[in-house]
Length: 159
Image (tube, rainbow, N blue to C red):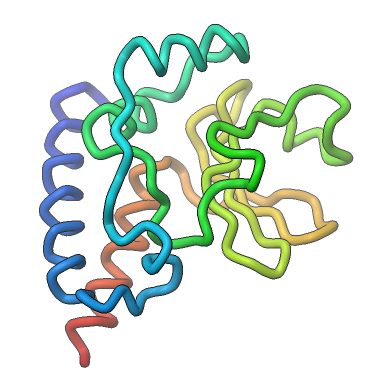
């Protein structure tokens, strides 16, 4: 996917978030009471510092999302309580797949969404439940986010 495609998708995502926040004034969707549709945008120097600190390069879609939309996972309790970014490193988790991932959303009951930032599955979103091995969930961060937006809009528009 090229930069223009990512920019177009982010433009649509921002429009959908605005529509969602208008439809969901009471923040009734799961997790939105915490974020209230207020996303914290990152600067290029902040992202570079994170990448240097963890010796990673964020996948292009996620990097662009942080710069253009921001971080504020409205579809969850938020990121790991350790704060964003919470990056799993060697020996820190019992499942090898968690190594090289960033915790992007925690939805309760031990369910977390992880963005893979290294290796063959870089850019994919995986899900882990309590003590189960992580499993693939979405082919990309934007696909994962757009899916949540579509389902959320459909739910609110039905009421």
